Length: 315
Image 1 (cartoon, rainbow, N blue to C red):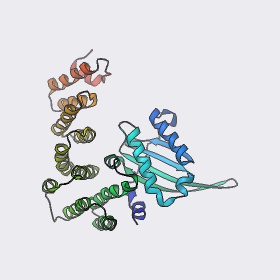
Image 2 (cartoon, rainbow, N blue to C red):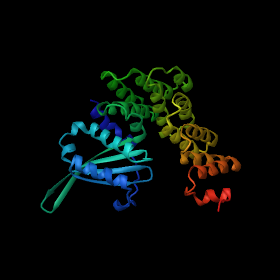
Image 3 (cartoon, rainbow, N blue to C red):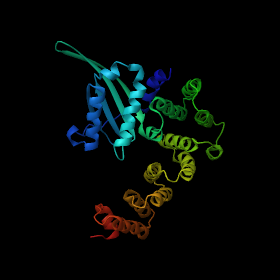
Image 4 (cartoon, rainbow, N blue to C red):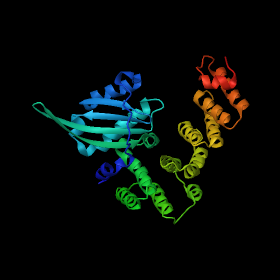
C-alpha cells in the first residue's frame, strides 16, 4: 500500500523547470563515477543532468528496475543514499525518471514514471536499513501534505504508516502539523520541548526541513534551535540551516549556526567564510575580516573570492 501511495504522492515535489545546460562531459568526477556504477549495477542506459538545486537522472530500459516495479522505493533509496554519501555538498533534490523504450521498425515509443525526493530527508535517515527508509521519507511527505493544506492526504499517509507499525513519535509529528494547519494548536516550541526518546533530534530535523521546503522560516527556526542544542556535533545540518537563514537575510541566526559549526570543526573553511559574510551583511566588517584572516591561518593557499578580498583589502 505504501508503495502505491508513494508513487502517487511523491510528485508533490515536482520541479517545473530543469536546467539542461550542464553537459555530460562537464560533470564532476564523483558524479561520473556514480553514474557509471548505476549503469553497471542496474543495467540499461543512465544519464544525468545537474540543475541549480537538483539532479535529474533518467534510467532507460533498466532490466532490474523494470522487472521489479514493486521495489521502486528500495531502488530510489539506494540511488539517493549513494548521492548523499558520495557527492560532497550534494544538491537537495533528486528527480528520477524510469523509462521504458520499445522499438518497432523505425518507430520508437516510450513511457516514463517520475519520482522526486528531497535528499536532505534521505541524508537524515541514511543510517536506517534501506527497506525502512521509504517509510521515514513518507513521514516527511505527510508533513508536507499537511503544510500544503491537504490534511486528508496527510491523514491517509499517517494511517498507512500506523498500519505498518511505524514509530508513534513520527506519527505524532504528522498529527501535530495537521492540527496546527487547522488552527487547533499553535505552539511549535512546546511540541518540540515535549519530544523525548532516541529519535527526538531526527524528528526536529524533519520538522525543520519540511518548513524550510515551504519557505516558513519562523516555524523552521522553532525546530532548528532545539535541534542544534540537542545535537551540536551535527555540523552538516547546522551548515544547511545557516545557509538557509543567510538566504532569508536572517544574518544573526546564520552567524550563530556557523559559529556552532566552527566550534565543532575549527578547520571548516566554508563555515568561516559563511560567518564572515553574515557579519559583512550586518555591517560588522572588522569581525568578518577576522574570520577571513583565520582562513589564511588554516590554509595559507586558500582561494579567496575577489569580492571578499575587496572588503578586507587583501592583495
